[in-house]
Image (tube, rainbow, N blue to C red; front, side):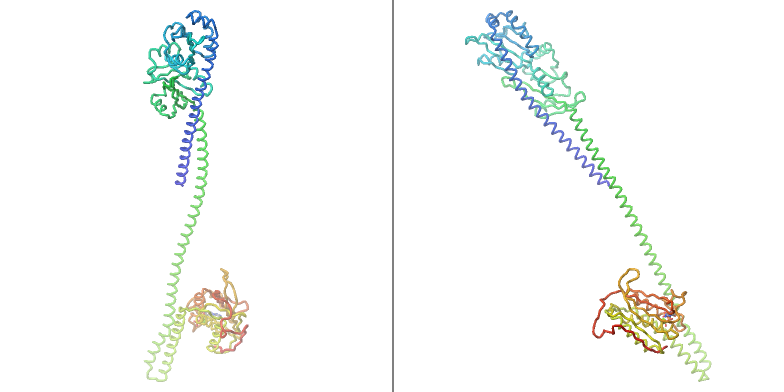
Length: 591
Ligand SMILES: Nc1ncnc2c1ncn2[C@@H]1O[C@H](COP(=O)(O)OP(=O)(O)OP(=O)(O)O)[C@@H](O)[C@H]1O
Ligand SMILES: [Mg+2]
């Protein structure tokens, strides 16, 4: 369970890391795109505004009154003529500067600051316009620390320059427009090397701007689109932005994404940077919500799978436990069974020893008693001979008993081979006829096909002989003994096999002793050893078969030996063939 949970956690972690990384990439790419758009828009805006300024100045140059006033250097006339125009341009078109300079670039009038005049304008735009005789425009720093888009146009009359008109728009307005068009905030930072502290301070108050000179070592803020410069933008952040990286900062509880664009003035000199800032709070919130919901769903699905797994494992575990318990019980039963079998063996051995002792003891006691009697009556030869004959009979009884014991012992030698069962039966009946005295009829009934099985013919003959002998001993009248062989499957397993039955019409077996007849030494006959049926049972078991007994309703007993089908049934050789259906009735000697 735990390894599975760990794998699930690892997958979720990998997913979260991948999603975070991807979000960073997407975010960076979006900002890079915006920065490029800002750069393009800035360029376009500068070009468009410069065009508009140029058109305005051209229109202004057509004004004779103004021209005459410039040529006369009449500041009041210029102020009168241009004052209302500048006010309109400032209020409606965000023009912040309007200069009227003479042909030597000496300032005649600053419409935006009329008190300052008489100084020489030596900025790049002015000198360049003078040198080329062409209008020049571009971003340029002013004396008050303002970064301004300026256009300087030479005013020529009849091929002679009578003066220069200069118009300017503060960068603050430019970045405001960028904000309106692209929805990004920006800050203009200028290198302190190009601005004097005092002038910057003056400009700050004059133009009512916000800013702190000491905020950064080498930069100062000159324009911004937000009310406040985010305090999280430190010098270290600026350094990293200058190296081309993007940064995410937290300001007013919102995530802001920053990038930087270098700013060049009209002379191509790097003068500072434009910091572009985009609010990504909403984007991040959406992203985190999406990732969290995906992780939540995955977690729920994973936990569901884990729960299913847990239930399934629990079931398997319970099944395994049940099986294990069953196996354990079986093993215990098996051990118990072995123990009982061992006990039974010991008990059977005890019975056997007792029986053997009993069987041998009786004649031996008789021999001792008869020998003592013979010793006492040695004077009477006739009596002595009679006693000796008794002793011989007792000895013969012992001998008969030991012979039958030896016959029983022989059963353990077991050699099986393909054997025609009918032939075994016929040979046994022949032997039986020679052994048993008296008249008794034996009938045999076999299938048409020869039945050939893998058996030990000697042991089988021995078993059948015992059954015939018992049948003969039980038969009192003229009833015949019937032997038959027929195919019959095993009653429990259904395995194919054959059953050899011996049926007599004798006295039958009393029901109370029916289950004892296979016990060794069990006998109801005075001269019996009780080993005949145990031999039959042993032989059947050696052949993986069994023997059964039943009393017949019409009187008499039937013994049946079941043998498994171990060899193909069919004729085996010419000398082993026998009549198709044998019904042999033989009169044989009755014992
Ligand atoms: N066909 C039968 N009819 C009636 N009783 C039988 C028959 N076969 C066996 N019995 C009974 O089963 C007992 C045991 O038979 P078993 O063959 O084992 O021993 P036995 O015949 O008594 O002695 P042994 O065969 O050693 O000379 C017999 O004493 C007899 O009571
Ligand atoms: Mg017997």
